[in-house]
Length: 272
Image 1: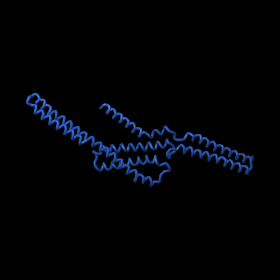
Image 2: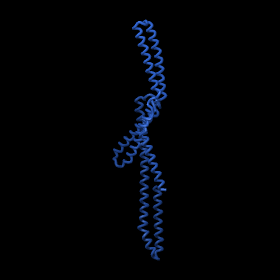
Image 3: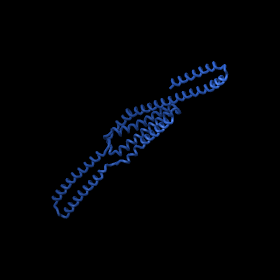
Image 4: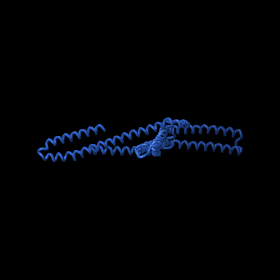
């Protein structure tokens, strides 16, 4: 049973380590996704081709005008007709480009590649800020009061800022927010949440440490009981057992031992 429980704890720690590692390196996975839509390359080639055709036609008309193959009125008519023709084609090409980019965008960003980079980076900082806060709380016994207060603000600030960018990457899908909104969101929403998360972590850490401390005390009492039985009763009862007159004394010792055992077990149960 103990071996199975130990194996389960080991698997849990390995699984937790893998999850934490994936959270930290999440932003690196963006490199496996395209930064631009593949169709944009063909669109760009079409755009360059239209510009080249338009310029080539205009240069040819200028050459004809200079060689007096066409009159000024003919040149003007053909030049603006050509300009209008390619203007519509180029406009259509640009509209196609915008549609392709919009379809390829993700959650208000130009691509899933870029969104995953921003979200992964901010989320990894959020996870690290939680780990940092946990470490600060565990080591708080070795620090003075003023330093502990400074650590509370520092940890809460890390949590608040990283949480803000996580929220921003998920929920802000349009154009960038006005500067006052950033300040208000950080001060009125993220910082209180950061403080709440810090104190929640501290509560669970303190609760866990108290449970461990109570467990240590319970184990100490049980070990003390075993030692007391061994030293003060076991050997004496063995000696009395060799005598035919020691039966009553042994029964009294048994009652004393039982009383100590049951009282100790009750104390341990009450503390846990």
